[in-house]
Length: 76
Image: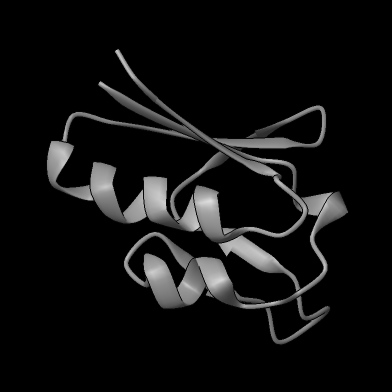
């Protein structure tokens, strides 16, 4: 299972995650911060759990590209 976690409140709106993984991330028109699509929010952390391993590489690239390091990707 692929687990992606986003600390959205720390986002600076650089858009790198959207460029690297457009099927998982998009920028909010309201506040200019990233949104992890289909994620569940709990205490400020947005988490997506997926059995689709095809998203792993793109999400890892998004995590590496993030200048504020607010995206974590785990492969369980």
